[in-house]
Amino acid sequence: MERLDTIAASLPKRLGQCADFLRHNIHLVAVSTVADLSAGAGVQPSAFMRFCQALGFSGFSEMQALFRAEYAQLRPDYAERLSQLRERGAQGPGGLAADFVEAGHKSLISLMNSLDEERLGEACELLAAAGTIHLVGLRRAFAIVSYMGYMLDKMQVPTVIHRTSGQIESDHAIRPGDCLFAVSFAPFSQETLQLAARTADRGIPVVALSDTADCPLRDTARVLLIAREVDVGAFRAPIAAMTLATSLTVAVGGRRKDGD
Image 1 (tube, rainbow, N blue to C red):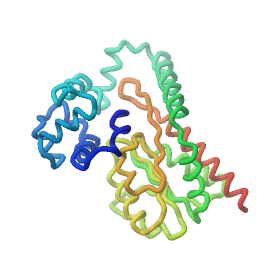
Image 2: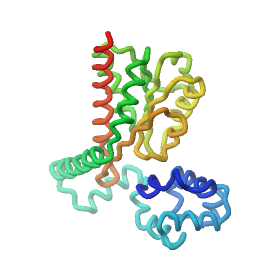
Image 3: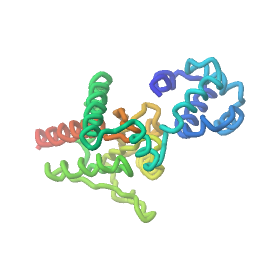
């Protein structure tokens, strides 16, 4: 994934299609043929083979071998994740706590090493200038936007959290002069992506947070922030993402207070 993030912007069109398809269908690599994947990406098998080579593999077979070895860890259900932890010999809650602390520490070190302060500053400016800050993040991302909403409310910053439930679109609440902060992690929430796209189409700025630079939000966001997490048995605590979002929220609150 890190290699893909590095080369994605420089790939030719056909190989870029392969990259987009892989990003959204990564769970298919271990169980599909190169013909299946190339058809899904809308390219010839030879183009998908070149894409594999661009990633550093000798060909599709070598890449598939890697994904087959990791297949059980890609997107297992929660029963499988718990089974994996038992197989690793997890030593009760104390041992798990130690594992998550170590994973969180690694996630934070990675965040600091890759932090783009200029981009973070631009995100702060957009949010601080907004009449109302709109937040959207579903599933794993909901914890992040709900905490941001709590903090912004305490700092008396007008804020709306969009839950996109019941097939009710809340676009009308996002008005010119506002800003949308969208959070989505692989495999990505379509509701979040669609709200962000509709908002951007209206000329309203979108700031996004994800775990990959090749996130679909990159096409709609004025600023895309990245926070990757180290997992423990396929469980991920959003340590880096929460830290980055909290830092941004406090900075926005301070900026608005200074502007009063």
